Length: 182
Image 1 (tube, helix red, strand yellow):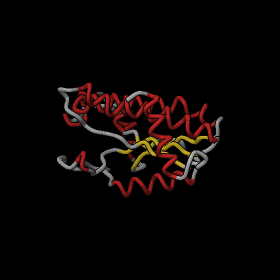
Image 2 (cartoon, helix red, strand yellow; image 1 turned 120 degrees about the horizontal axis):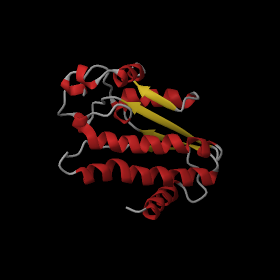
Image 3 (cartoon, one colour; image 1 turned 60 degrees about the vertical axis):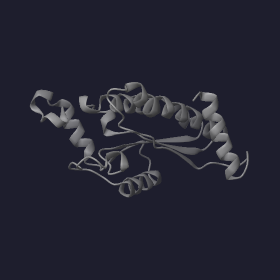
Image 4 (tube, one colour; image 1 turned 120 degrees about the vertical axis):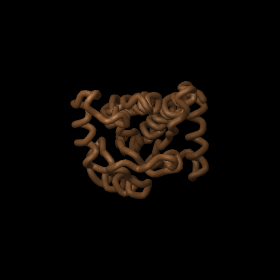
């Protein structure tokens, strides 16, 4: 999909919500698949290219109306990637970077950006995996997002303790970590 096509899809959605003068309060960018490590182009296309185009298009739509919130579901993997989910983590790093680096310019246009960095979330994408410590659910993640929208934070971790866990893991040598965390 191209940037123009993505923009067109958002405009059609806006028309369906009430027409071209309808104001959008929030756009949630929640796209992800672990993908197949043997087909990195599909994983990167789904998790990076598509979401990046959606973020840029959403910024344009919200910026043109001078208000709104853009909620970007990133991942803890954006900050602490692992080889076992390398292409997923690379893609999440890309959208996390895009959202973080455009936050200030969007703020000047009246648009708030909220980056959400959950760890493991029990969804159909992760149904085949055993939930690790500090895992979450979609409803718990949604509650964190709703609370964050009432505050001023630009980045949240779900659950909050994950921020400190990931920070600690970033400074430990990978050779000291168990295989699943390397």
